[in-house]
Length: 321
Image (cartoon, rainbow, N blue to C red):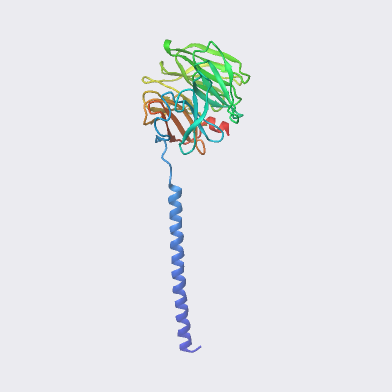
């Protein structure tokens, strides 16, 4: 090989090296940019326990209550636009009428059983109503004239229901069990003003709160829905309480009526967190969203829903899936 040929070959090699170097740098930069973008995307996290409005104000009257989420992720509440109705809310916060209740009936708590049926505490007629979600047919599932006004409801995995039953005038209350055949049994009377009621994820504990007395009681719960070993879980020194729900870890989320917060309480009665809401009179709470980690709260003073994200899904959300 002569000098000219050798020089030309070297120049060609150098040129090729420069091209490869430029291409390599470009690819490396593009890959780096891509990784950084992916890292940024992965790093984006929703801020937990920050409440925002989910529906527009005043879509519901002050009687908004009983939030519950069905197996399809649709959110429901009583008293849409007027009393005696059930409203439903889609994932975008758009509310619409689902059903009108029978004449004279006004709903409060709502729950779904394992078959997807909706159950509603009808406090004016002392009923537990059942709604067929396909036909929207409404029937009386249970009735007892000795009820004051069935308020909130809870449900076990085996579909046994419980109802709190306050006597607001006399600051008293009681709790009822409703078997799967509609049989109603008084579990305890002579209580304080019973309101929020819920079952633990393992179905071994029933929680009941007394709004006026500010107590939250825990009971051992048998597979047949009988209670024993009553004990005080926690007592608050101010403001009232309303509806409550558990997450899959067994933590209890309690709405603080008048204070405008939701308190997260451990199964041992320890306050883990208190979430500030925009409204002051939350009446109840349910879990929903894509994976059950989104809490939905009914606000009576604003007539709407607020929502915040949590770490763990709600117990009933998982049960209904």
